[in-house]
Image (cartoon, rainbow, N blue to C red; front, side):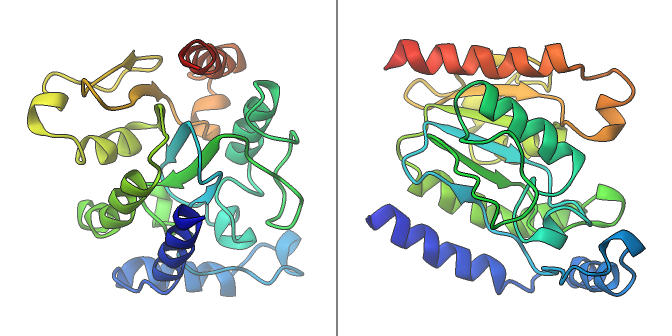
Length: 229
């Protein structure tokens, strides 16, 4: 209960954040110039908090909300192709109660999983600046502190990977390089780190990330958690 109360407080802080003027201008512009297919939607158009199980064993860190995904629906990995890939994989490996994620009121429930991101606002061309990542880093730091039962951290893409490494001590991250399907334990008493390409269309439609590669990562994580239990 205490963890949930603290996460709710953090959620309020994230939603009210206005640290990055460029990102705030962009999310407002996206709302005004939304595609015709989404004209009936009332866009979220604000920073997005993480969501999921406060007793999560698996923490997933993405890049940032998609302009017409999370920025539209009000929940990360919801309403876009990346969310389709992620939630389907979570469902098939027992980490979600349903295989789709279309709106924040669609009944999706994460099981022993929490989803967050390195950046909380949709960035232009999906490319946040270094300072924008740093501005958001305090929110990830707080989640890492509050989610005390996490056993595996899965980073999606290089920015999420590097964003997580910022929260490790120098010795723990020495020699760590981004590589898909890497699984290691940077800190002796800390969670395992699993690394994957981001399930963006740029990766999935070019074959850089196939469904077989993608689902294999989640099956390995599920097996690790089962064995540790």
